[in-house]
Image (cartoon, rainbow, N blue to C red; front, side):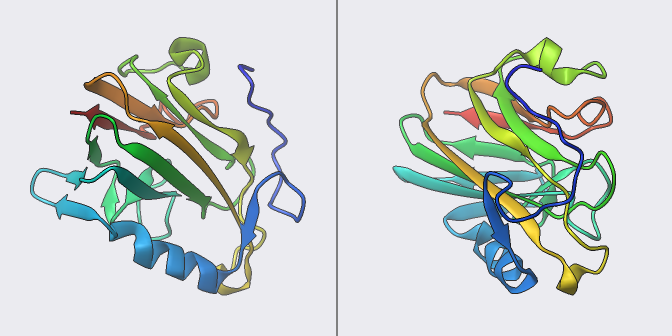
Length: 180
């Protein structure tokens, strides 16, 4: 499965990444706009500087299913400067069977088939393993999976951030990622 392991389980200690409680997720969300210029009209989040942190949520409650949220926007266009060191922090707030999420940044544009990772290949960047779903249906009682990756934004162009879980990108869990 292109390096991604699927286990279809809720988060538990030792899953392979961080485990956050609800207060930590609230802090994570509060930091999602740090260093970002948000333009709701164009549905774009633009970052500047040599160090960029993108705080991303997989399926934030109150937003549509099978989406990513950044700085309060659903599947926004993300713009980063060429040469910047980019850190993507992803937390999975989704709940239920087959609600693991991950991230690939790829030059392959949508639409994507059921098995998106077969169309995107390993991409330029990937977060792995897939993040398990939250541990409890109650937001304040749940534990949440979080994972980070860093890379240098190299070749300018338009790329796509995609969830590699089967059917998720096909259903719209994708957004534009621009290096300029």
